[in-house]
Image (cartoon, rainbow, N blue to C red; front, side, top):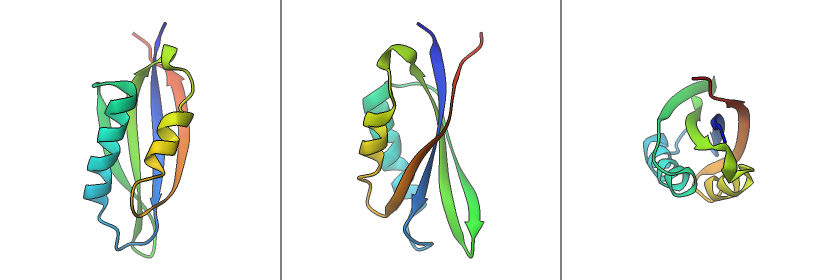
Length: 92
C-alpha cells in the first residue's frame, strides 16, 4: 500500500487560544493514529488576529479513513472545528 499526505486544518475558538499548546497536543494524537513520520505545522492567518493551524502529515494508506483522527483532534481544548482539506498519494 502507498503512503498518503494528509492536510488537516484546525480552527480555534478565538484568537486567545494558545496555538503552540494545541499544536503539541495535535501532534501527539496524530502520532498515536499514524505513527511517527514527517509532519509540518504552520499557522494560517484568517481574520482579526484569528489563526488556524495547518498540519501536514504522512500516513499509511492501509489505515483507511481519517475519521478517527479527526474525532480525536476535535477533542483538543479550544479547537472549534477540524477539517481534512487534502489527501493525496505520495510519489516516490
